Length: 77
Image (cartoon, one colour):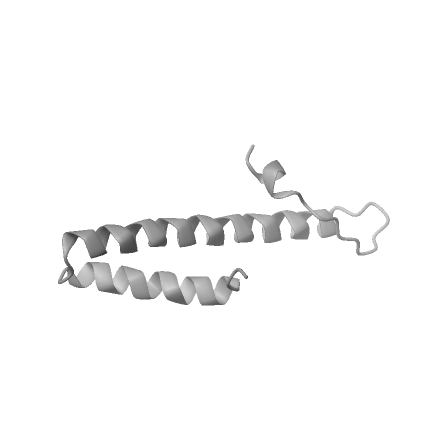
């Protein structure tokens, strides 16, 4: 199961802190960097998805509130 946005963000912050300290062996630094990139992309995708859903809500022509699911592939324009 995928972590929540908040959990991913906390984990990403912890990785950044460890990498900034610079006391890790090269291989461990590379692994953390790769995981950090993955978490960053995941968080960015979730934020983009949330932004698009808000835009859909705001553009409802009837003045009501509707939400549409957005396919993750449609976010990569």
